[in-house]
Image (cartoon, rainbow, N blue to C red; front, side, top):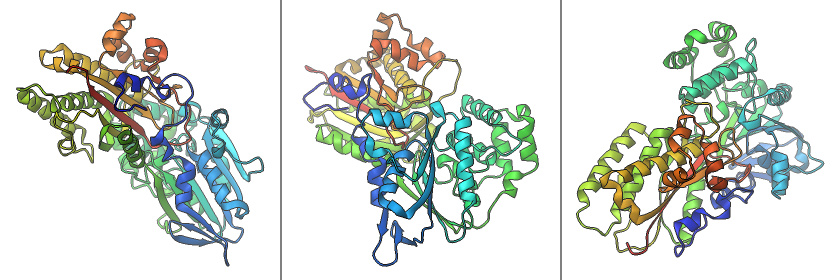
Length: 521
């Protein structure tokens, strides 16, 4: 969004960055791009004995430095790392999303591309963020490199969101297809990313500390760009450089929770019954040094600074919004209503405001978002004397329970559901006050890809449902079929889609609410 206080929210939402077509990443993304982050973290000292310094911790270099990486942001991370390391880097292999080199080249983001004579081999795979045979070949090459290292070697590991799909290495006799079928079943039933990663780790040779085991006894230095709430290193990309805290019994409990125990492939049953995950355990991980170098919180802080520069009164409510997309949509609808009621000039709305606040509090408790304190946050909002438009920011990652066979992503579905919930609120007698405000809601993935679609997300207004009906589009029908991308593609010629292309980074999603009183209100 790029809207000055003197413009309307609709003008902000119509900014080219939010329309179809390629566009440069906004400020929130700029701050978590790979280059700046690595240069803040990694230092090469060549005076005297050459040393690699990671967050103040020195490691001696003796032509012993290797690099591997996997994730949506890793190409840019590798380019920045090679700029820093120069000839001290012996060899590297990275697994990155299919098409990302061409995308970054087309976007003119050459700082995220490797030099022609690079010592790092780039392997593309996992089209639409789904593991495939190309990603398996990359994982095998990374495993071979790590497995050939010796005690005196250093392995620099670059990890970002999307790394799990780019490092598939099922424990034999499990096939990639069997593992992914099980993962898709879990996802369709609403399993959390934590639950999905617990299963992935247990069935993988490299996840859940597997890469660290393969590299032992070499020193492993991991630079991690977090795409998981709370930045737990055992969850990000399924924790390839940290021991998994989960047991086979934990996996069986998850599968039982979603009624999948009776439908497990024979190969998965074989692995679980033989306790292969426990047999692969390494008790000593003292050779591993893990550092989180970027997160959703950093992106939100930069977005807040930019919004304030543009004249918005801005609050960040959480960087850990999670839960079912339908419930999160209700949360944002109630939050929007409460903000509007809080800045209304009309007297006698205290009763309605208390009712909305109570509903919001109950929903917040149900979602159990770790750092969500809406009451305290909203106390920073102005009284009616402050005429500035308001920007409410949050981040995190929702989950979608699949019911249909449409095409969409969690960000597009969230935007569509918020629009529907606001529409329903206005249909009640108590919700007519919303007509006094321009309201826009945006949800976008910082990686530039929302589910298996070409969009990063979408934005919506409270008028969207009625406007869609005028075009013959029934919002509820599209939602029942989980077909949000198709809806936004057809609605207003796709103008409400966020089409950034792959950004080269990934720190979960950003949600933004823009609210401004209409003239004359």
